[in-house]
Image (cartoon, rainbow, N blue to C red; front, side, top):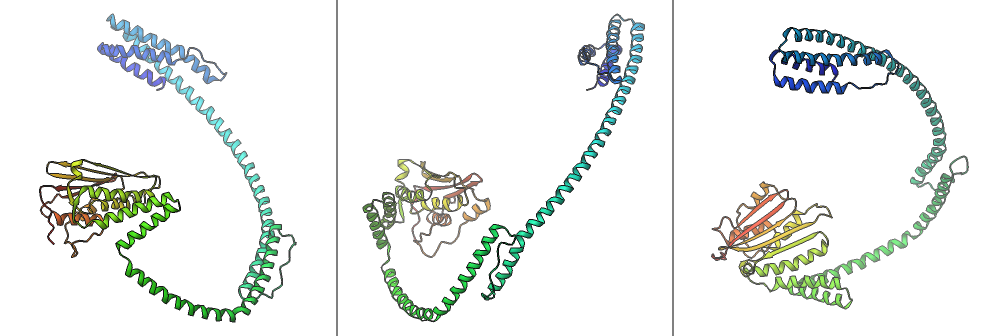
Length: 447
């Protein structure tokens, strides 16, 4: 705030005090008086111009203006109306004079600054002119150097392009390019390499033409052999397919594990061992309803294989009570949920992103509550509603097709009267699939 504005505020509070004798106005007068006195410097160096001298001369007038205000306040307290009225009129006249002088000083300084700005513009214009001349000169010299350098570079390249077109037409009888005529040394080496390449290609084509008949006969013979070999391989594949079954696959993996142990490939052997355990776990199960412990065991084997793929950024947490482990549930309801997290929830995630899957199972009254949650990208509410919509079951009653949708529909099949057997909670921070199994109700297994 400027001195003029401070004086205007001070005058308003002084007028209010002289009119109403308000204590608030008196307090504000004392504050404004101190602020104005502090704003006026006790010492200011005068640089010799008239504006600074006039400004220095205003300081005593402002101090006198404040002194008159204090006298007017004292006369108001003494209820001497004529005295403080006369003082106020004197203050008004003094204030008008101070304002005029401030306006004169401001105008003078503005004019001096305007003159300095005009001089600055003139000097700047001169500098810009010389800079422009310098830039034009440097640009012209640079263009001459550039044209000369480009000519040394482009002329040999143009000749190379002409010869390349001739070679593409099959004309290898053209003479070699000459070097050492003002071109760049690196281009001379390129031209020499091009001449050598042209000669080598010409010789190679002649050799190819001489061998074309022999090659054609060789290809015909090879084709006959490949047909015979394809027939044999077809018969071998047919035999292998006839032998392929789950037990054969398990025995093959088990053999690979033993071979890895013999070769001291401990990591590979352990991987094959867990794969064999997973297949053994699947093959041995013939039941539709199994203890929840069975699901946890298979999931642990499956998760070990996943950790090989994601060794640093995949974490599985399993928290199950002993009572929950002994509760019977439909088979293959846990692994597909974890697989769904890997395939969909963590799709396109950064390599350093820590993928977390949390499995929690506990008994609450008559219900077994199973929660499978992840910290993936989640899904839309529309997608969740679509997945939770009941649909007709597949004609195959023992179908084990993996996927969240399959698990939902199978749970609806086993518990047709329980509308809340499964639910999905999802947002941008992850997804949680909640399964509520009524332990006091037998699942429907009539197909």
